[in-house]
Image 1 (cartoon, helix red, strand yellow):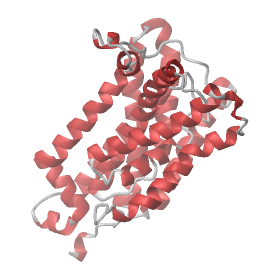
Image 2 (cartoon, rainbow, N blue to C red):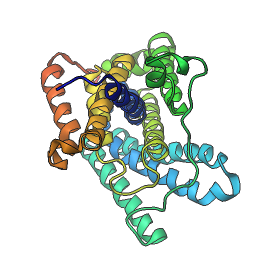
Image 3 (cartoon, rainbow, N blue to C red):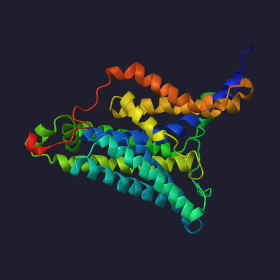
Image 4 (cartoon, rainbow, N blue to C red):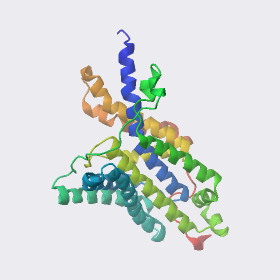
Length: 324
């Protein structure tokens, strides 16, 4: 088969910007999981928090877009973050104050998030999905750089501004966790909560903060899916992206930059599953193969690399002040 340079470039023009758009919700949600697990609370409820964030985003924009225009997107992001935080508060109360099993609590959050959003859709729209939103974030090209031959159209011509928000969150998290007292305290609660308590650190307070931050970022992750990938909310809008975020957290070894790289990898696998049947319709491969492709790659990556991955020592362990 003869190599077609033009077709190859067109494929990259589609692949790379789409990968960045798909990766952004995974990365920001995984960073949210990082805060929770660094504090010592396992949060497998990220999927449910993304769902409630996506639904809140779609509902807010549909309600405000005619009167506020693009400002409805800003309000939708804020309300999505708040919705995720409220759902995370349930997880924090159950797993920290009530000392419930964190896996069971997270599973309940996933069920509650999806069921609540679908019930609200039934009530408000008499359907399993919302109507399509009319305003959203738009792509833009980086001035001058987008005109560079070959790499300009691939790397600098189709950026969503949300990707800059995600990169900012990654950099801020790295600085906060490794160079500020708050980060030292948070990580101490996830490694040796008894020692942290003996030093005067309020372990319960720090764990609540970690879980609530995870809800805020997961809610934003769900909103980004609606704004950049889908134009409405349905039961398939998130479709396991919260679990991909959890995998990115493990694959990235609970480090902000590791999570960034893992999120980009999983975003690439999901993008390949989306665009391959479109770009290569003559392959005659069943669609289900492309749909499960990112999850198969996720399992393979975790099997191959997770053995050397060690999370916070006290993650998932209920802290009992009387036991120290």
